[in-house]
Amino acid sequence: MNAAGQALAQAAARCIGAPFRLHGRDPASGVDCVGLLHVALIACGHPGLRHFAYALRNTDISDGLRAIAQAGLGNAHGGIRPGDVLLVRPGWTQAHLLIVGPGGDCIHAHAGLRRVVRTPAPLPWPVKRHWRLPTI
Image (cartoon, rainbow, N blue to C red; front, side):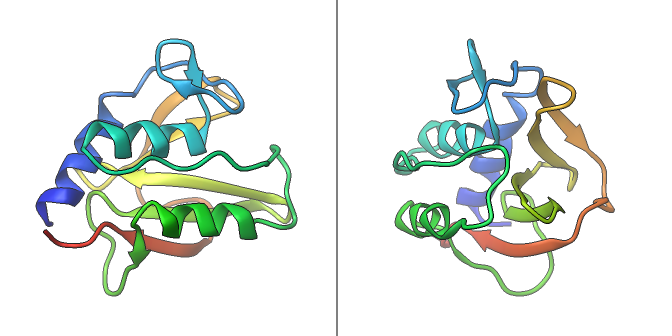
């Protein structure tokens, strides 16, 4: 794992237990999966995600994909490592972001549980995209 990935994984882990709030970007008042990634990126010294329009259900995620690329995340190759960011599809119109935690589990804002949680591997959803911060 590179230092940037380790920092992102640890920043995400510090948010476990934060409340869920759609479009939230503050762990004290709540975050969603986009907000969790935004907060974790800022916490480890990277640009956060620019604001873009989205809902709990989306068929077009192209604006979100551009925001992720603009934040400095690049396509990852090889196995999943702590600090990697995964896009999964829990349902046909649902796109969801997860951050791989320090121990290899996934940290994400769970709308149903109403908080940021840790989910062990293997994930119950198909991984559609896999990003990583560049090695510094």
